[in-house]
Amino acid sequence: MIVFLVIVFLVLLIIVHELGHFLAAKLFKVRVEEFGIGFPPRLWIKKAGETVYSFNALPLGGFVKLFGENISDDEKISEEEKQSSFQHQPSWKRAVVMFAGTGMNFIAGWLIISSIFMLGIPPGLAISQVVTDSPAESAGFKVNDFILAVSANGASVLEPKTPDEFVNFVKEFRGQELLIAVNRAGQTVKLKTVPRIDAAENEGALGIAVVQKGIEKLYPPAAIYEGLKTAASISYLIAAALGQMLVGAFSGQPVLENLVGPIGIFGIAVNAGQIGIIYLLQLVALISLNLMVINLIPLVPFDGGKLLFIIIEKIKGSALSLRTEQTATAIGIALIIPLFIVVIVRDIIKFF
Image (cartoon, rainbow, N blue to C red):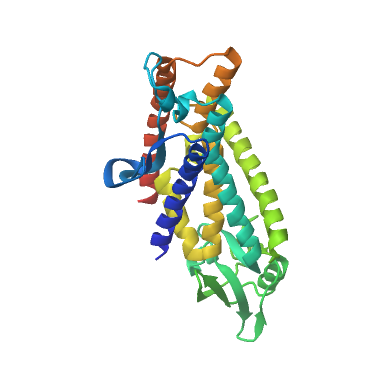
């Protein structure tokens, strides 16, 4: 069930992005020749009106094919066709169409985050780290387990509300067996462990780190406002991190270790879904905002590259030649494909 939900959410993010381009094109009466999910070969196809809708075999994104998008400089079309040709629209309209996909990704992230604020997350203590070769690892504790209660000698019982409460209780009963109940993916699991009397520095008696998690439930107006602020803040942090990564790449720093491809994203999403639907929604919102930022990179075939073409055209006062655009696109793809392959291979090695 979780795997199915993850697939549905990821496909919906693709649809949302392409729907932005589609609706903006329709708004300006630009003919949409095809609306595709994934890339060919085609698995399913249906034509409705002037648009072909397709579901394709390669799940690497989606596309909206616009009439006149790749029209050559010397190609002649009628005045009637120019009305529905993308290339013959004013630059501001083309910019809106190109930006609409990323705009929809931001709106999707914003609405998902707002819905999380409306639902709220009950406060609790979550395990954020398990130290290797520690009592906690031996007992079977896992990251994202939520601590429900801890008892010693079958008598002293604590339902910790803060990290300090839990840490102080464990310190009090060092060297004695503890029974700790945790919530793991909706199931209550009871684990036995003995805190170390002499623990290594910065590892603690059990060898775990705990953090307080929870989101206050808000009424819709406040949730929508907080969702907007949070989505904007996350988008800024993603853009800043991406900028630092690019600077690091040009300065010779290793950056591939921090990159995750579609297989890795799928694996992380499944893990989040197993913890709870709220955590899956948080990840989906984060992925949507990541898609927005990445698509604004000024490199073709990203939307940002196409927006850059429009800006250059506006500055120089004339359109770039089709050959120039095709050359820039080929260079962009030549840069992206090898990186994409390396990231996928790393994902396969890491997750399988």
